[in-house]
Length: 394
Image (cartoon, rainbow, N blue to C red; front, side, top):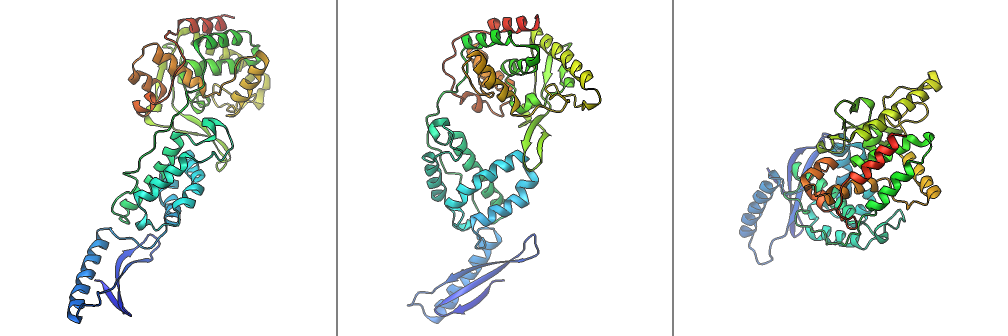
């Protein structure tokens, strides 16, 4: 039942809404000021009506305590995110806290509107990258802006679930259309030249040759490649399966293994015999290394390992590839660009979008079709596969 207190010319209406997870009583309150022309009887009648309406609103979760968005967001991290979400996702959200709190952290949760969030999103479109990199002209990408909106929306969804607000103010927020530059990846001619250069690499670097050829041919993500184990390769059917991903977290003390990014990321791909032969050769070379170091070898079953059998560091392939490009004069692109090259080859070879989505492990086909590919010409894998075979036959 509502409690009413007279405060000068106004009235304070309080309603008890039970207790929170810490055992503290949750009190909702509002102030009602009567019109000066109202009689005492009219005031009493309207005051009781306001109290009943307010109590009903509280019971339906349409009114919240005076908690700022930043304070509630920090509660959300402890009560939900750190328990339900993956470590990498939580760390990514923590990196976005500063900008979000600066823009809307001071606003009461029940006062947060679509307009507040829309204004913040528009400001992000003109914001500079905090890491100083020149990607996308030094501006935030559309994907990053969507992640900011997603984080705020997820927090608001939790507030709705906890009956602290009635609706999510993010629902009507729109992301402005931002021109996204084409992905920087190799043309077919460049990819063919890369295969020829790999064919000249020494046995010492064969591990990395296998890594990048597998990246181009399968489109696996960096973490998926590093998480591959020999038991994931069926040498009889030529099928490679993604069962895990290898990630890095400072909070977890370095590399750690987790389930793939999405359910769709757990997938199996059939590769040509030449790729399988290449892996067999690397298996033999790795076995020689295992025997060479003896008791110092740590058995992990990982395909891509350091000298002692432990999983290869996430920075190692990129570091090798930069030096490789400097040595050979090959135009440098990022390791992730090999995934874009794979997608481009599939799309330009006439493979339907749904199949490409499945091969890449995208959660939706929208993700696949929204990636801007431009310069690759219509072709097939045949010419590149020949390079695979030449490497394996050395």
